[in-house]
Amino acid sequence: MEKRAYSKSVDRISQLPEPVISEILSRLPIRDSVATCFLSRSWLHRWKDLQLFNFSTFPFVGQKGFLDEQGHTRFLAFVNEVLLHHRRATVRKLRIRYYSFPLEVDDAALKAWVCAAIGSHLEELKVVSEGWKLFTVPSGLFTCCTSLVNLELTCSSDAEELTQVRFPSLKNLKLVFCNPNLVTAILSGSPILETLDLSVATELRVFKIHSPSLKRLYFCDVRSIRNELAEINTPLLEYLSLRICTSRYQLTSVCILHNLVEANIDCYAEGIYVAYIPKLLKSLCNVKSSLVLHPSTIYCLVHATQFDLPEFRYLLSLELLNKNLNTRFLFRMLERCSMLQVLTIHQGTVHAWTKPTNVPYCLSSKLSIVNFKTYHGNKDDKELIAYILQEGLALKSISIGFGYLPLNSEQGQRMINELSHLPKGSKMCQLHFK
Image 1 (tube, rainbow, N blue to C red):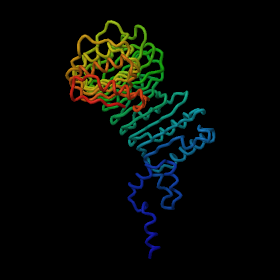
Image 2: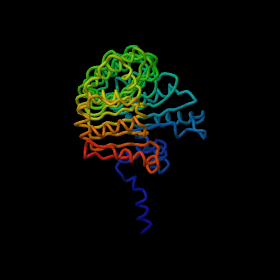
Image 3: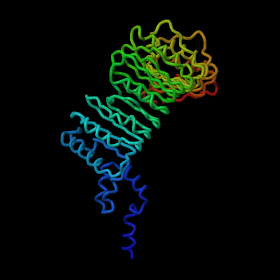
Image 4: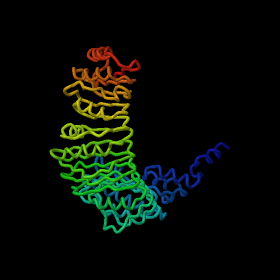
Protein backbone atom coordinates (compact mmCIF):
# COMPACT_ATOMS: atom_id res chain seq x y z
CA MET A 1 0.00 0.00 0.00
CA GLU A 2 2.81 2.41 0.92
CA LYS A 3 4.68 1.49 -2.26
CA ARG A 4 1.59 2.24 -4.42
CA ALA A 5 1.03 5.62 -2.69
CA TYR A 6 4.65 6.52 -3.22
CA SER A 7 4.57 5.62 -6.93
CA LYS A 8 1.50 7.80 -7.49
CA SER A 9 3.17 10.83 -5.93
CA VAL A 10 6.53 10.50 -7.67
CA ASP A 11 5.64 12.42 -10.84
CA ARG A 12 3.35 15.18 -9.65
CA ILE A 13 4.76 17.65 -12.14
CA SER A 14 3.52 15.56 -15.06
CA GLN A 15 -0.01 15.87 -13.70
CA LEU A 16 0.07 19.67 -13.90
CA PRO A 17 -1.77 21.45 -16.73
CA GLU A 18 0.30 21.84 -19.90
CA PRO A 19 0.47 25.67 -19.65
CA VAL A 20 1.96 25.36 -16.14
CA ILE A 21 4.53 22.78 -17.29
CA SER A 22 5.45 25.04 -20.21
CA GLU A 23 5.92 27.97 -17.81
CA ILE A 24 8.19 25.88 -15.55
CA LEU A 25 10.32 24.77 -18.51
CA SER A 26 10.59 28.33 -19.80
CA ARG A 27 12.03 29.49 -16.47
CA LEU A 28 14.77 26.84 -16.47
CA PRO A 29 18.09 27.35 -18.26
CA ILE A 30 17.49 26.21 -21.84
CA ARG A 31 19.95 23.30 -21.54
CA ASP A 32 18.04 22.00 -18.51
CA SER A 33 14.73 22.35 -20.34
CA VAL A 34 16.03 20.28 -23.24
CA ALA A 35 17.50 17.73 -20.82
CA THR A 36 14.01 16.91 -19.51
CA CYS A 37 13.57 14.76 -22.63
CA PHE A 38 15.52 12.04 -20.75
CA LEU A 39 13.07 11.89 -17.84
CA SER A 40 10.48 9.65 -19.47
CA ARG A 41 8.68 9.00 -22.74
CA SER A 42 5.98 11.55 -21.85
CA TRP A 43 8.66 14.24 -21.48
CA LEU A 44 10.48 13.35 -24.71
CA HIS A 45 9.03 16.20 -26.79
CA ARG A 46 7.65 18.66 -24.25
CA TRP A 47 10.60 21.05 -24.55
CA LYS A 48 9.81 21.39 -28.25
CA ASP A 49 6.67 23.38 -27.38
CA LEU A 50 8.62 26.14 -25.62
CA GLN A 51 7.83 29.69 -26.66
CA LEU A 52 10.50 31.38 -24.54
CA PHE A 53 14.18 30.83 -25.42
CA ASN A 54 17.20 32.15 -23.53
CA PHE A 55 20.50 31.18 -25.17
CA SER A 56 23.91 32.10 -23.77
CA THR A 57 27.52 31.20 -24.53
CA PHE A 58 28.48 31.24 -20.84
CA PRO A 59 27.71 27.52 -20.20
CA PHE A 60 30.02 26.67 -23.13
CA VAL A 61 33.17 28.53 -22.02
CA GLY A 62 36.30 26.47 -21.48
CA GLN A 63 38.39 26.00 -18.35
CA LYS A 64 40.44 29.11 -19.15
CA GLY A 65 37.35 31.29 -18.87
CA PHE A 66 36.77 32.11 -22.53
CA LEU A 67 34.99 30.51 -25.47
CA ASP A 68 37.40 28.23 -27.30
CA GLU A 69 36.80 26.77 -30.75
CA GLN A 70 35.24 23.58 -29.40
CA GLY A 71 32.88 25.47 -27.09
CA HIS A 72 31.91 27.84 -29.89
CA THR A 73 31.06 24.93 -32.18
CA ARG A 74 28.99 23.28 -29.46
CA PHE A 75 27.09 26.51 -28.79
CA LEU A 76 26.24 27.01 -32.47
CA ALA A 77 25.16 23.37 -32.83
CA PHE A 78 23.01 23.53 -29.68
CA VAL A 79 21.09 26.67 -30.72
CA ASN A 80 20.61 25.36 -34.26
CA GLU A 81 19.35 22.00 -32.98
CA VAL A 82 16.88 23.55 -30.54
CA LEU A 83 15.39 25.99 -33.05
CA LEU A 84 15.32 23.33 -35.78
CA HIS A 85 13.25 20.93 -33.66
CA HIS A 86 10.98 23.59 -32.25
CA ARG A 87 7.48 22.32 -33.02
CA ARG A 88 5.44 25.46 -32.58
CA ALA A 89 5.35 28.11 -35.26
CA THR A 90 5.38 30.90 -32.68
CA VAL A 91 8.29 32.21 -30.60
CA ARG A 92 7.16 34.75 -28.03
CA LYS A 93 10.52 35.60 -26.47
CA LEU A 94 14.05 35.10 -27.79
CA ARG A 95 17.11 36.18 -25.82
CA ILE A 96 20.64 35.58 -27.10
CA ARG A 97 23.82 36.42 -25.18
CA TYR A 98 26.60 35.69 -27.67
CA TYR A 99 30.12 36.51 -26.47
CA SER A 100 32.69 34.77 -28.66
CA PHE A 101 36.01 36.53 -27.81
CA PRO A 102 38.67 35.79 -29.00
CA LEU A 103 36.76 34.15 -31.87
CA GLU A 104 34.60 36.02 -34.37
CA VAL A 105 30.84 36.09 -34.02
CA ASP A 106 29.09 33.94 -36.62
CA ASP A 107 26.89 36.67 -38.12
CA ALA A 108 25.13 34.28 -40.50
CA ALA A 109 24.05 32.04 -37.61
CA LEU A 110 22.93 35.02 -35.54
CA LYS A 111 20.85 36.34 -38.41
CA ALA A 112 19.29 32.89 -38.99
CA TRP A 113 18.25 32.65 -35.32
CA VAL A 114 16.58 36.03 -35.43
CA CYS A 115 14.82 35.09 -38.67
CA ALA A 116 13.50 31.93 -36.97
CA ALA A 117 11.75 34.08 -34.36
CA ILE A 118 10.27 36.71 -36.67
CA GLY A 119 6.48 36.63 -36.68
CA SER A 120 3.39 38.34 -35.39
CA HIS A 121 3.60 36.49 -32.04
CA LEU A 122 7.11 37.71 -31.10
CA GLU A 123 6.86 39.87 -27.97
CA GLU A 124 10.51 40.22 -26.95
CA LEU A 125 13.82 40.03 -28.80
CA LYS A 126 17.14 40.55 -27.04
CA VAL A 127 20.49 40.14 -28.80
CA VAL A 128 23.58 40.91 -26.71
CA SER A 129 26.81 40.39 -28.59
CA GLU A 130 30.16 41.87 -29.54
CA GLY A 131 32.28 41.76 -32.63
CA TRP A 132 34.05 43.87 -35.23
CA LYS A 133 31.39 43.33 -37.86
CA LEU A 134 28.03 45.06 -37.98
CA PHE A 135 25.05 42.86 -37.27
CA THR A 136 22.68 43.41 -40.18
CA VAL A 137 19.18 43.03 -38.78
CA PRO A 138 16.75 41.20 -41.13
CA SER A 139 14.24 43.64 -42.61
CA GLY A 140 11.36 41.29 -41.76
CA LEU A 141 11.83 42.15 -38.09
CA PHE A 142 10.66 45.71 -38.77
CA THR A 143 7.49 44.79 -40.65
CA CYS A 144 6.22 41.43 -39.37
CA CYS A 145 6.59 41.71 -35.58
CA THR A 146 3.45 43.65 -34.77
CA SER A 147 3.27 42.26 -31.19
CA LEU A 148 6.85 43.16 -30.28
CA VAL A 149 6.95 45.00 -26.94
CA ASN A 150 10.65 44.81 -25.98
CA LEU A 151 13.53 45.05 -28.46
CA GLU A 152 17.19 45.07 -27.44
CA LEU A 153 20.05 44.94 -29.93
CA THR A 154 23.14 45.44 -27.76
CA CYS A 155 25.57 44.96 -30.61
CA SER A 156 26.74 47.24 -33.40
CA SER A 157 23.57 47.17 -35.48
CA ASP A 158 22.48 48.22 -38.90
CA ALA A 159 19.60 47.09 -41.06
CA GLU A 160 18.88 46.08 -44.59
CA GLU A 161 17.28 48.81 -46.66
CA LEU A 162 14.11 49.82 -44.85
CA THR A 163 11.02 50.95 -46.70
CA GLN A 164 8.84 50.98 -43.60
CA VAL A 165 8.85 50.12 -39.89
CA ARG A 166 5.73 48.86 -38.12
CA PHE A 167 6.07 48.44 -34.37
CA PRO A 168 2.56 49.27 -33.11
CA SER A 169 3.18 47.53 -29.76
CA LEU A 170 6.83 48.46 -29.08
CA LYS A 171 7.31 50.11 -25.66
CA ASN A 172 10.99 49.50 -24.83
CA LEU A 173 13.93 49.86 -27.23
CA LYS A 174 17.62 49.43 -26.42
CA LEU A 175 20.02 49.87 -29.31
CA VAL A 176 23.73 50.21 -30.09
CA PHE A 177 23.66 51.80 -33.50
CA CYS A 178 25.92 52.94 -36.29
CA ASN A 179 23.30 54.33 -38.66
CA PRO A 180 21.21 57.24 -37.31
CA ASN A 181 18.67 56.65 -40.09
CA LEU A 182 17.87 53.29 -38.47
CA VAL A 183 16.91 55.03 -35.22
CA THR A 184 14.86 57.66 -37.04
CA ALA A 185 12.96 54.96 -38.93
CA ILE A 186 12.24 52.94 -35.78
CA LEU A 187 11.03 56.01 -33.88
CA SER A 188 8.70 56.99 -36.71
CA GLY A 189 7.17 53.50 -36.75
CA SER A 190 6.77 53.12 -32.96
CA PRO A 191 3.77 55.24 -31.93
CA ILE A 192 3.62 54.09 -28.27
CA LEU A 193 7.36 53.81 -27.47
CA GLU A 194 8.01 54.71 -23.81
CA THR A 195 11.67 53.84 -23.08
CA LEU A 196 14.59 54.47 -25.43
CA ASP A 197 18.18 53.47 -24.57
CA LEU A 198 20.68 54.48 -27.27
CA SER A 199 24.43 53.99 -27.41
CA VAL A 200 26.46 55.42 -30.28
CA ALA A 201 28.99 53.21 -32.07
CA THR A 202 30.03 55.62 -34.80
CA GLU A 203 30.83 59.27 -35.49
CA LEU A 204 27.67 61.31 -35.97
CA ARG A 205 27.25 64.61 -37.74
CA VAL A 206 23.54 65.22 -37.49
CA PHE A 207 21.17 63.26 -35.32
CA LYS A 208 17.58 63.73 -34.19
CA ILE A 209 15.46 62.10 -31.50
CA HIS A 210 11.78 62.79 -32.18
CA SER A 211 9.09 60.87 -30.32
CA PRO A 212 5.71 62.16 -29.12
CA SER A 213 5.21 59.22 -26.71
CA LEU A 214 8.66 58.78 -25.15
CA LYS A 215 8.84 58.89 -21.34
CA ARG A 216 12.39 57.68 -20.56
CA LEU A 217 15.51 58.45 -22.61
CA TYR A 218 19.04 57.13 -22.03
CA PHE A 219 21.63 58.43 -24.49
CA CYS A 220 25.31 57.45 -24.32
CA ASP A 221 28.13 58.57 -26.60
CA VAL A 222 31.68 58.13 -25.29
CA ARG A 223 33.43 56.94 -28.46
CA SER A 224 33.04 59.41 -31.28
CA ILE A 225 35.35 62.34 -31.96
CA ARG A 226 32.87 64.96 -33.02
CA ASN A 227 29.11 64.71 -32.74
CA GLU A 228 26.26 67.06 -33.31
CA LEU A 229 23.17 65.99 -31.42
CA ALA A 230 20.88 68.17 -33.46
CA GLU A 231 17.50 67.83 -31.80
CA ILE A 232 15.76 66.20 -28.88
CA ASN A 233 12.03 66.64 -29.29
CA THR A 234 10.24 64.49 -26.70
CA PRO A 235 7.45 66.55 -25.09
CA LEU A 236 6.23 63.80 -22.71
CA LEU A 237 9.69 62.88 -21.40
CA GLU A 238 9.79 62.16 -17.64
CA TYR A 239 13.34 60.81 -17.22
CA LEU A 240 16.50 61.86 -19.09
CA SER A 241 19.98 60.38 -18.79
CA LEU A 242 22.70 61.87 -21.00
CA ARG A 243 26.26 60.56 -21.01
CA ILE A 244 28.30 62.37 -23.65
CA CYS A 245 32.05 62.42 -23.09
CA THR A 246 33.53 63.70 -26.34
CA SER A 247 36.09 66.48 -26.71
CA ARG A 248 33.86 68.46 -29.07
CA TYR A 249 30.14 68.47 -28.65
CA GLN A 250 27.46 70.68 -30.13
CA LEU A 251 23.85 70.78 -29.08
CA THR A 252 21.71 72.69 -31.53
CA SER A 253 18.22 72.14 -30.13
CA VAL A 254 16.57 70.57 -27.12
CA CYS A 255 12.91 71.30 -26.54
CA ILE A 256 11.84 72.46 -23.09
CA LEU A 257 10.86 69.27 -21.29
CA HIS A 258 7.77 70.30 -19.35
CA ASN A 259 7.00 66.84 -17.90
CA LEU A 260 10.54 66.01 -16.79
CA VAL A 261 10.70 64.42 -13.33
CA GLU A 262 14.33 63.22 -13.14
CA ALA A 263 17.52 64.04 -15.05
CA ASN A 264 21.03 62.56 -14.87
CA ILE A 265 23.56 64.62 -16.85
CA ASP A 266 27.16 63.55 -17.55
CA CYS A 267 28.37 65.70 -20.44
CA TYR A 268 31.86 66.90 -21.24
CA ALA A 269 33.17 69.35 -23.82
CA GLU A 270 36.24 71.50 -24.46
CA GLY A 271 37.00 74.99 -25.76
CA ILE A 272 34.18 76.83 -27.45
CA TYR A 273 31.94 73.76 -27.12
CA VAL A 274 31.69 74.24 -23.33
CA ALA A 275 28.96 76.81 -23.96
CA TYR A 276 26.60 74.09 -25.19
CA ILE A 277 26.38 72.49 -21.73
CA PRO A 278 24.60 75.48 -20.09
CA LYS A 279 22.29 75.53 -23.12
CA LEU A 280 21.40 71.92 -22.38
CA LEU A 281 20.76 72.73 -18.72
CA LYS A 282 18.25 75.44 -19.64
CA SER A 283 16.10 72.84 -21.41
CA LEU A 284 15.83 71.00 -18.07
CA CYS A 285 14.50 73.95 -16.08
CA ASN A 286 11.14 72.25 -15.44
CA VAL A 287 12.60 69.11 -13.85
CA LYS A 288 10.35 68.34 -10.89
CA SER A 289 11.95 65.75 -8.64
CA SER A 290 15.66 65.03 -9.05
CA LEU A 291 18.66 66.43 -10.93
CA VAL A 292 22.06 64.69 -10.88
CA LEU A 293 25.11 66.53 -12.25
CA HIS A 294 28.36 64.61 -12.85
CA PRO A 295 31.90 66.03 -12.46
CA SER A 296 32.36 66.63 -16.20
CA THR A 297 29.11 68.61 -16.40
CA ILE A 298 29.95 70.69 -13.32
CA TYR A 299 33.41 71.40 -14.77
CA CYS A 300 31.86 72.74 -17.98
CA LEU A 301 29.34 74.85 -16.08
CA VAL A 302 32.04 76.35 -13.86
CA HIS A 303 34.28 77.19 -16.85
CA ALA A 304 31.59 78.36 -19.25
CA THR A 305 31.69 82.17 -19.52
CA GLN A 306 28.84 84.67 -19.71
CA PHE A 307 25.86 82.46 -19.07
CA ASP A 308 23.05 82.40 -16.55
CA LEU A 309 21.91 79.26 -14.82
CA PRO A 310 18.20 78.65 -15.33
CA GLU A 311 15.64 78.83 -12.55
CA PHE A 312 14.73 75.33 -11.35
CA ARG A 313 11.39 76.35 -9.82
CA TYR A 314 10.12 72.83 -9.10
CA LEU A 315 13.29 70.90 -8.27
CA LEU A 316 13.13 68.97 -4.98
CA SER A 317 16.44 67.06 -4.98
CA LEU A 318 19.89 68.08 -6.28
CA GLU A 319 22.88 65.71 -6.39
CA LEU A 320 26.37 66.96 -7.25
CA LEU A 321 28.93 64.26 -8.07
CA ASN A 322 31.90 66.60 -8.03
CA LYS A 323 35.55 65.91 -7.24
CA ASN A 324 36.41 69.37 -5.90
CA LEU A 325 33.44 71.41 -4.75
CA ASN A 326 33.33 74.96 -6.11
CA THR A 327 31.24 76.74 -3.47
CA ARG A 328 30.45 79.70 -5.73
CA PHE A 329 28.85 77.31 -8.19
CA LEU A 330 27.06 75.49 -5.35
CA PHE A 331 25.39 78.65 -4.05
CA ARG A 332 24.57 79.85 -7.56
CA MET A 333 22.68 76.59 -8.02
CA LEU A 334 20.96 76.90 -4.63
CA GLU A 335 19.83 80.44 -5.46
CA ARG A 336 18.04 79.04 -8.52
CA CYS A 337 16.38 76.09 -6.74
CA SER A 338 13.81 77.86 -4.56
CA MET A 339 11.86 74.67 -3.67
CA LEU A 340 14.88 72.40 -3.01
CA GLN A 341 14.42 69.99 -0.10
CA VAL A 342 17.30 67.50 -0.49
CA LEU A 343 20.95 68.31 -1.29
CA THR A 344 23.57 65.58 -1.80
CA ILE A 345 27.25 66.45 -2.28
CA HIS A 346 29.91 63.91 -3.31
CA GLN A 347 32.91 66.18 -2.91
CA GLY A 348 36.54 65.22 -2.60
CA THR A 349 37.21 68.49 -0.80
CA VAL A 350 35.81 72.01 -0.76
CA HIS A 351 37.73 74.25 -3.16
CA ALA A 352 38.26 77.85 -1.99
CA TRP A 353 35.43 78.40 0.51
CA THR A 354 33.80 81.80 0.04
CA LYS A 355 30.90 82.91 2.20
CA PRO A 356 27.98 83.99 0.01
CA THR A 357 26.68 87.54 0.29
CA ASN A 358 23.03 86.38 0.40
CA VAL A 359 21.51 83.29 1.96
CA PRO A 360 19.70 81.24 -0.75
CA TYR A 361 15.94 81.13 -0.18
CA CYS A 362 15.78 77.33 -0.21
CA LEU A 363 18.45 77.09 2.52
CA SER A 364 16.56 79.38 4.89
CA SER A 365 13.07 77.98 4.27
CA LYS A 366 12.86 74.65 2.36
CA LEU A 367 16.04 72.56 2.58
CA SER A 368 15.42 69.74 5.09
CA ILE A 369 18.00 67.03 4.22
CA VAL A 370 21.69 67.48 3.40
CA ASN A 371 24.07 64.60 2.64
CA PHE A 372 27.87 65.05 2.59
CA LYS A 373 29.19 61.78 1.18
CA THR A 374 32.87 62.50 1.96
CA TYR A 375 34.14 64.80 4.72
CA HIS A 376 37.90 65.26 5.14
CA GLY A 377 37.87 67.58 8.12
CA ASN A 378 39.84 70.42 6.55
CA LYS A 379 39.07 74.09 7.25
CA ASP A 380 37.04 74.75 4.08
CA ASP A 381 34.92 71.63 4.53
CA LYS A 382 34.14 72.61 8.10
CA GLU A 383 33.31 76.21 7.14
CA LEU A 384 30.77 75.03 4.55
CA ILE A 385 29.02 72.65 6.96
CA ALA A 386 29.01 75.32 9.68
CA TYR A 387 27.38 77.81 7.31
CA ILE A 388 24.68 75.35 6.20
CA LEU A 389 23.97 74.35 9.82
CA GLN A 390 23.61 77.95 10.93
CA GLU A 391 21.54 79.24 8.00
CA GLY A 392 19.46 76.09 7.39
CA LEU A 393 16.37 77.04 9.37
CA ALA A 394 14.27 74.14 8.02
CA LEU A 395 16.94 71.45 8.35
CA LYS A 396 15.87 68.11 9.81
CA SER A 397 18.88 65.94 9.02
CA ILE A 398 22.52 66.28 7.97
CA SER A 399 24.34 63.06 7.10
CA ILE A 400 28.15 63.23 7.04
CA GLY A 401 30.31 60.42 5.69
CA PHE A 402 33.98 59.98 6.65
CA GLY A 403 34.85 57.69 3.77
CA TYR A 404 37.12 54.85 4.94
CA LEU A 405 37.97 56.59 8.24
CA PRO A 406 36.54 54.52 11.17
CA LEU A 407 34.12 56.49 13.34
CA ASN A 408 35.71 55.09 16.52
CA SER A 409 39.23 56.14 15.55
CA GLU A 410 40.89 59.06 17.32
CA GLN A 411 40.61 61.29 14.24
CA GLY A 412 37.01 60.23 13.62
CA GLN A 413 35.99 61.02 17.21
CA ARG A 414 37.72 64.38 17.02
CA MET A 415 35.84 65.37 13.85
CA ILE A 416 32.52 64.17 15.28
CA ASN A 417 33.10 66.24 18.41
CA GLU A 418 33.94 69.37 16.34
CA LEU A 419 30.88 69.07 14.13
CA SER A 420 28.51 68.22 16.98
CA HIS A 421 29.32 71.52 18.74
CA LEU A 422 28.64 73.76 15.73
CA PRO A 423 25.67 76.12 16.26
CA LYS A 424 22.42 75.16 14.51
CA GLY A 425 19.71 77.38 13.09
CA SER A 426 17.13 74.61 13.30
CA LYS A 427 16.22 72.92 16.58
CA MET A 428 14.93 69.90 14.64
CA CYS A 429 18.26 69.22 12.91
CA GLN A 430 19.93 65.89 13.69
CA LEU A 431 23.51 65.02 12.71
CA HIS A 432 24.24 61.50 11.45
CA PHE A 433 27.78 60.24 10.95
CA LYS A 434 28.71 57.37 8.61
